[in-house]
Image (cartoon, rainbow, N blue to C red):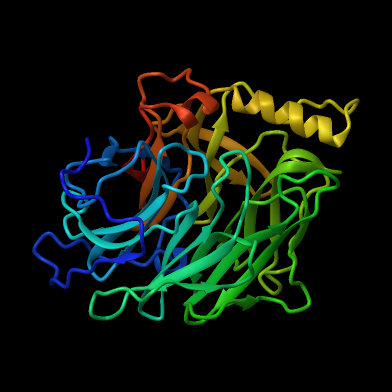
Length: 411
């Protein structure tokens, strides 16, 4: 259901409510796995709570469109912050809005923190806390529903009084930010640029940048401004218990390694020296995000029911493979799933599905305890599990966002 409150106008709107955390205040624990002690001798099982749907909801102070996706969460200042994209459909639209709300009672009620509407599409929000400041980043796209048109990166931050700074353009035009984590007090961000969704050889570049304060991100290694070049774009990462970096990249555009996904690694002494396999995993893991529990790294991503993405049609040109694989992928059902990274074999192991169907999978995850993680995700209605991804993207019943807790339970 939609909120009875009035819609924010299609202009940049900033709304802040300065109020002290009440008795329902939630804690703001560290998301850094090194801040937690986990008994690695235990063989844990993964358990999911029941989902709590929060968007759309009468508890929200804003109206929403049918499609609600591209979600981010963060815990800060005794509040749960949630940012998401709302639009008529999954596809680019001039009517897209990005809202940020916060809750002191774990999502039972919300206040409006900030809203953005630029008259074009906005996507890929990231919320993160660095140097005691809550930051929001996202990118602006176009209005053509059939085109991928990155225009600019934007950011803002929450001031100490609870108000938000005006959004400002930053970074490189045409670059898409993907994953942001704060590890060891340092911000790390992956992004990509180049020939994504374009004809010809794949020349997508993935970047790894770092920041001490959130205001300025620079290449982790100036001699390696591109940590990857090929057909992969969305790059999730996590730091392992030895200080090394693991990454899962979606290889949608294809290259000499094939199509699907890549599991890459970099040593602790050189986080920008990514080593990626010569052959892609034929499964495509869209919207990947990684988390670590103990010494194990896990993946949250879209699961392609009826895949794999790469059908092994080496008799076709690269262009024809792209076209045929994408058409088949769009017309298959999808789930959001939890996987484990087999570090020795550098492969992905399926564990379980989250509540999901149709148009689904843009997970955001934040740690709430040694063995618990809060996840936000979106999905089409769950009563039609066979709905295809394409059907879900344009359906009138839209998509909703829920919160769910992942627990690593001891026997």
